[in-house]
Amino acid sequence: MLTQAKVDCTLEIDRGERFEFGKNWSQFLTILDEKRIAIAEQSLQEMLAIDHLQGKSFLDIGSGSGLFSLAARRLGATVHSFDFDPQAAACSAELKERYFPGDASWTIEEGSVLDADYLSSLGTFDIVYSWGVLHHTGAMWQALEHAYAKVAAGGYLFIALYNDQGRATRNWKIVKRTYNLLPHGLKFLVLWPAFVHLWGPIMCRDFLHGRPFSTWLNYKTRRGMSAWRDVVDWVGGYPFEVATPGDVFEFYRKKGLQLIKLRTSNAHGCNEYVFINQ
Image 1 (tube, rainbow, N blue to C red):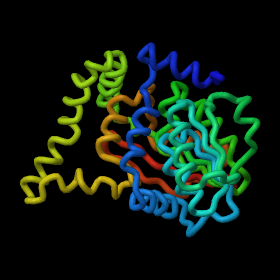
Image 2 (cartoon, rainbow, N blue to C red; image 1 turned 45 degrees about the vertical axis):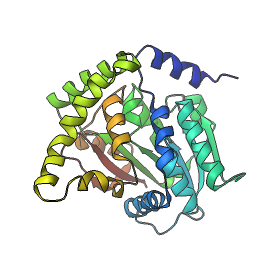
Image 3 (cartoon, one colour; image 1 turned 180 degrees about the horizontal axis):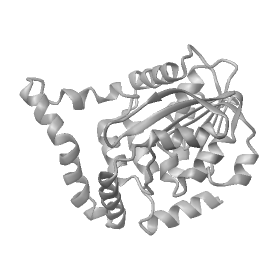
């Protein structure tokens, strides 16, 4: 049976209005190993300043590869994962089958953060997590509003959003839109020049310092992700919106959330925020 999320996602991909996030993450799962999972766990522990999540509920909005849902579950949380992209939801389901088969404390669904009726059925959570997702919905500020509504009293909201770079942001939006409009066989015309732009200077620097490919090979130390999959995700990631840290802080301050941790990006990456709902 086709869900509405699956129908909507497929239509947007076919029209070149949405990147195939789930397809990208399904390929990431082929290289997922214990070290990457441990790094993901450490990322949650560091940003949330916790040792474990025993007795906590964890909502993963836009679960993507499912890696951080898995990390939260291994830290002891009761986890609910959902994603608008059916292939991404299937990635979470695959990880659950690998590591927690039949586990009633980890549920996975297809759904949209923009669907108020769906969200109202979920209740609230101790930790609401959405890393690099809400800026891909096509309605980022509405998505931020909906994510906030899922945070229980005393709970945490941990999100990451693309940094606003002004003109560079506008240029990248053109690149991303072009990538998604091209047929599959021609996407390399955008992907490879973008790869050279993003990684060429870094690889030259590593070579000159006598450590060829060092940054590329050690990239998994950042949240346990894959360098190549992140390149594809960045170049293709569309819809595409951005925000300044000040705008996000002010948006949630008015709702009574307190910012307790902020990690900013000086380039095209994400700013990370942890708020508490006091």
